[in-house]
Figure 1: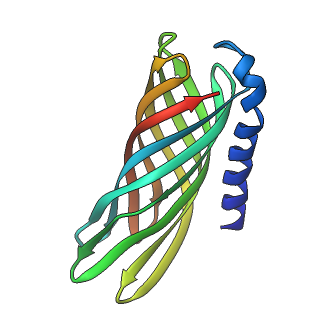
Figure 2: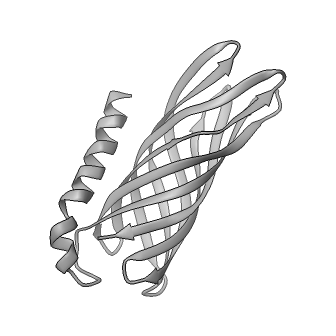
Figure 3: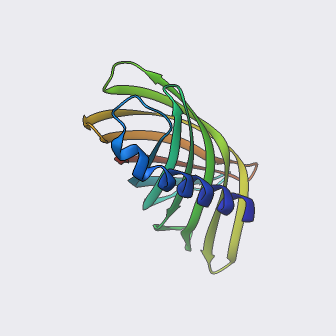
Length: 176
């Protein structure tokens, strides 16, 4: 957990450190920092039981190092559902990712994410469960203004023997 929090904080700080110099940059100069906010539709699928799903929020930030590669951190929270009489709540999900980018056009790009995440769930009654695992996903972004993009992605944050945790997210990204 400490590593993931530190990695996410480092990615956000690195993104912020480029804010003043990147303001003078035109599109195409690297490194470029970015931050984003998303609505996250998550699904916790326990093996042998019905799934829990709800809507939360996710913040992300990163640094695009060149046209094809970025590093990115995620922090998400929120949402709860009842599964078999047990209230299931997402306390948090945090992750660090390498982001491979495929520019289709100057305004549209596809990307893949590969990294490591940790999530903690609160089961009432019954306690908490915190798990970490390798994570992967894919998404697309479309630039609607010089520094503003809309995008969507789907990420498998956890793929454990007891359950899977996935999220589909839609949101905005501001590049500075």
